[in-house]
Image 1 (cartoon, rainbow, N blue to C red):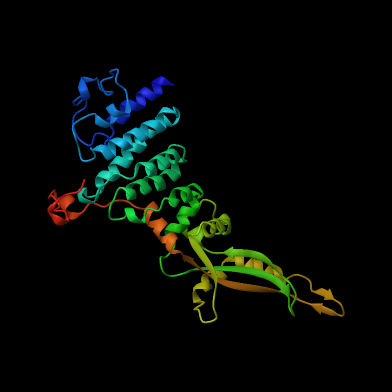
Image 2 (cartoon, rainbow, N blue to C red):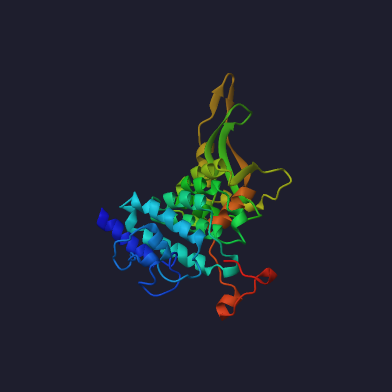
Length: 313
């Protein structure tokens, strides 16, 4: 166990998050041996202060080092993957223009790191994007703390569906029900069917109705009945899908029912619905898909003059 933790501390000291620049084995604090050199210091402060001051140095980033170390020290199994995750986080943070870069709130980072080290590999992307967005002043105000819990309650397929939704235009959803021709109760035979799972490349597109239920439960989408005045041409492709055609055919092929002196045919009803991203859903999607893009000044190597004549680190 101690070997894993010690190896992780060594890797952390090399991470760009804690040493954005400077040679291996840089200056030591108070003359103590650094973790990189294999000395006896070995505390999170050594990890945070190893190497000369770089773009991510300062009290805020040192606090993040403390939090990361606290997560590693109690999870030796996660220690194997944490250094690489931190390097990825550092790379994204350094891609943010320097005048917009800031340390995320330590309490927020503590919550995310706890999820990140335990998350399945294909869900870690959302947490890393969340942390990068929280470090960018241009988008940080949209980083709602509830997003951490929302990510935990989603699957990768559900994130894929969110990614393909239009921010303004609705997506077509329909349900097929059976009922007696002249009234009476109805029964849903095919519920909330859409093409979203297939278009998003979901691993289990047949579970799309359940995915939509969960997205709606979390407040990320809203499914509304279509109004008489709405344009229903967007439903043509969904109605022509073999699953919908088969459901309608199976209903209408059933034998009529005898109701008293009358014989009632069973017919298929189709209800049309429009699926929208909510304001909360648009904000969430922006954060969990965030990837910082260098500004022209970064690409050309010219410094950016921050508003007011000063820079913000």
